[in-house]
Length: 192
Image 1: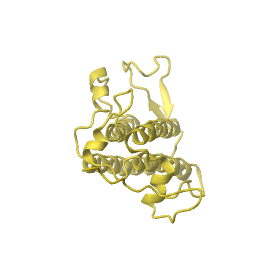
Image 2: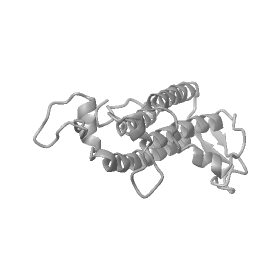
Image 3: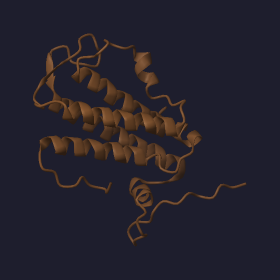
Image 4: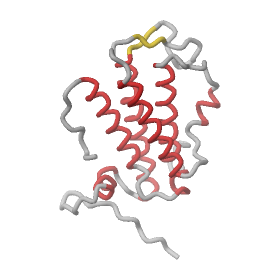
């Protein structure tokens, strides 16, 4: 997938396209990392690349549960924080993200009207108490925002690990030829 969303024909395609793009750039932050590096939290925060990908996938699944009105109720703050902790392998976290993406696409494609009301679960401390409904459209826009925010976090974490930046990772992942303005990322040789 290139660095920009391809042209779209309608709103649904646009929303799913931009959501896929944000997932892709979040995933790129893990390109070439070992399991240990994916769990590393090298900055002032406790965030790791693997934890951010895991959190985004679990959040996406949770939002689809809300859309389908399968929400089990408010979780604890500790349970929320646990979604950012990565004890799994990077392959497992990426598989979780892939599965969440497929589920979201299937759910959204099964809904005729993106304006359909989505009840706001009550008792969740981070949801507004004065709003009763969102729309499916709002949920998709929120997912784009949330995953985009975490992609930015992951860019910073990744750069702190080995200096790799988003566009050099994209160039490497897509096999682009080096350009004067962009060099594909290459793993650094480990000192022995």
